Length: 247
Image 1: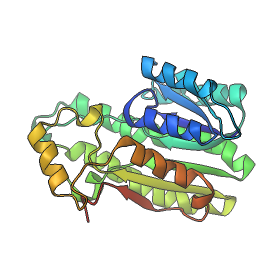
Image 2: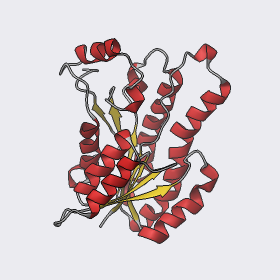
Image 3: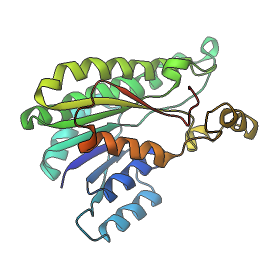
Image 4: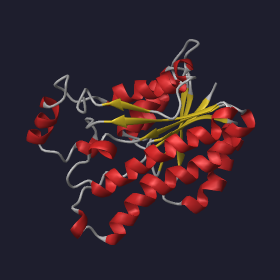
């Protein structure tokens, strides 16, 4: 069974990915600061599954802002589960705020979790992929990395950095059989967009080509595609999942 690490896997978009990947036969290692009842229920449901595609969901607690603790954490994952085949860098902060009045501490917090953390985690997970000469890395970016959105300048900057990271790393590791891609969701119906008012959500849906917002499962299926055989010759690219919002 192939191991896939999903950061921020205890709720929202990360949990949808964990459930979908487990159903596809992967052992998902969901990483977050703390577990949730929803994640525990998903883990039990995966354990009760049957058939050749039955996977599993495991939870490992870790504060992803603790970049200094990542080497030991990754060593522990390898000791418990073996080689990591896939890494989905999903965890992130979507804190909104006008730059001119944002606290410096909040800016640093967003950059640490959204940019520095996935880069450092990838560094240590990548080492086992290099040994195996196989692996898949998927970074969860956002459409605001390219389009911009008022009040999300810092968040947008961090997601744009992931796109640059994706393209360059794909060049570094491609000859070793490792793919690196990004998925850029639009506004998805999760806790992160829960602070948007009904009017804002309606306007977002109205300006999209499909006249609706994409759902977590849509992103989860895109990640599954990139991890699977269908994505074996796709690398260094950004897959947009936004119901045509940026069309």
